[in-house]
Length: 463
Image (cartoon, rainbow, N blue to C red):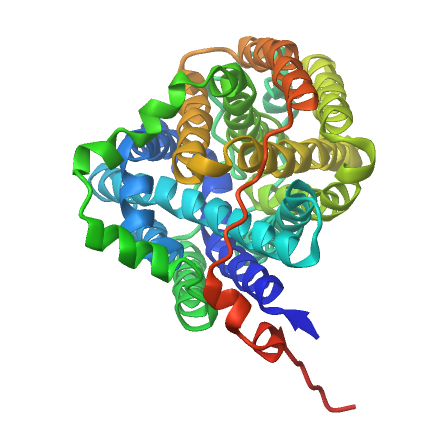
């Protein structure tokens, strides 16, 4: 038996798993697959620039009018459009679909975070438990399932691109330019960095479109519309548009949000480095594009398992301990990447870095999302919109300088943002320890009137 709230968490998680099996795979390949004139990286930069714009006004408007469920479905449709753009990649197909994806990205993630926070508070109130513990647990479950999308999406790309008959060994003179040894702005043309056969690209993108549509159907059919009443009441009130429009910016008056900006931006910097720079300058350069999927699968598997683990143990060892552990892991990886000279003979090492990076990213994702939910219970939509906006700014900056800064300097920038984050974050954590934020228990009278059987879903399986 599982509670209805927990069932909804699973539906959201599986929906995002399916959607990001497609998008995650495409994002990992953009810097290598559409390398001509930096088109792939440019499309990623446009995506996150559009997310910044949408974060400024769309999430509160959409969530309050449509409710979390239908905001998620609409956002997923925007992501699927980007897969269609990759069928015939070019400036006139990738850029418009990148804008569409970006506009839907912030409402999608804000609605997901809001939905999980509401579900966590509902369960905590019913079971007389601490809301932050249940929210941490729910985010851990979500990211455990969601982050495994990197495994399936990249497995698909590696298996399909592995059928390319033009793969051959990489000469030593090209291997000498891999990693931070060379500037890393360009990779010498060789058989493993060329674009795969077009029929293989179409096969892969077609599969991605299919799983993206499946994600929309899963959420539309199986997810409960738990904030339907709130959305209906909001539409009836007909509050001034400007009030909702400015909700994201009004929250910037809170010093805690301002102090969390470096930490939030770091999430964008570290993710963009792995998907944009590590895949291109280490994996594709030394092993070939067909290895990108396998390496990113390692990242996804570590991220998924650690998300579940850290979501469960956060209540025992605390957020601060986990954050500093993640910082230490990233710091050691950055120093090692500055010194390492990648070579095919060192194949296991290519998987060590994404595994450690995935472990650290699991902490950044689960704990930062949960922290926002705990700190801003009265302004969840605006808070998660700010989270997405500042995280996306980190993505935009990183992808923007990707084509003209040397790899060594990119690593130094990621390191600098990490250090600043670990200076500012403890200030917020200490204040929360001294003055805990009280959660809002969102339980309507209807919840109390419903018989207990309505809140339980019985799963029967044949033995």
